[in-house]
Image (cartoon, rainbow, N blue to C red; front, side, top):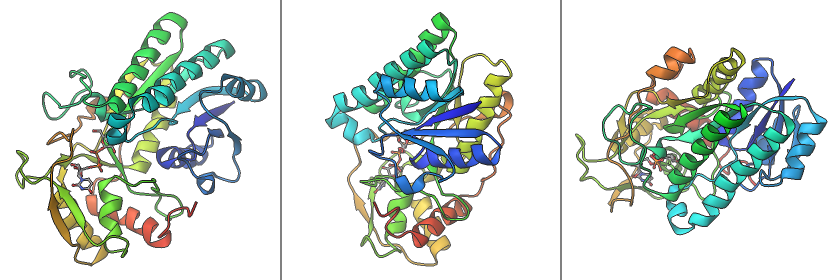
Length: 329
Ligand code: UFG
């Protein structure tokens, strides 16, 4: 039987496809290529260009293939944009989940592994953040992912679809051979933006605020390598195969790095001085986000391999230097 990866042409989806293939799984990709890249699709994998909101297209995939489980990466992810365009997020993310769950239940597919986010917590009540801490998202993106979790929980209780929701902290890095990596349009994430300075594509990096209650005044985040995230999805699949109940897990390294520390680490990795300027705070940025991933380590038997921020940044640097224009699409 195969697994269906919705959003398999995107950043985390494409790395997960690669790890699934390495683990010997049969993989099928569905992606509407609105954010994903054709060049990120493994040529050996059967690909359906389709939208997650198209139930007919999903049911065709389920009819033409024996699908054991669905991996759902096909959502919009920009918190800032979601504040301006909330309905765009509710349509693709929430309505997309509605259609996917309808298609799955109508076709008897009973396992889903979902790409959730630390954004479901909003401003955290304590650090490190645990899965049963309060969830109060501070933007429509976080709202949409929390609603998607609620939908899975209710459908799980009523119709027996089991899910694993993986709440990622700051996904970063790229495949070690530099063949696939991060390519967002527009790019909003810190590490790729910092690396654009030594790549000559950006004059400086703007630090969004240095008056946060942190040791150097800049925001602290928990950066987790994309291949470690990908591996967690395989652990989640095996957990569900072993009869595991529907569950939520944080995925982070448990270590926090400030914006300034990321820039310093990027200078070491690239061997270049990176020009920085101080800017205003970005709305909706919590001062510190650090995960407790004890639950994933214990229950999913997940063991992240990348525990060194310079190593993580060096994989991103390898990707960006070998693909200065990303996938070029
Ligand atoms: N930052 C800068 N300058 C920049 C870009 C970012 O100082 O040019 C700062 C941000 O203010 C933040 C940190 O770098 O303090 C990290 O920012 P990112 O945009 O890379 O990541 P976020 O922590 O904002 O967002 C990540 C995911 C989101 C998810 C969120 C959950 O990318 O999808 O975590 O909290 F919603």
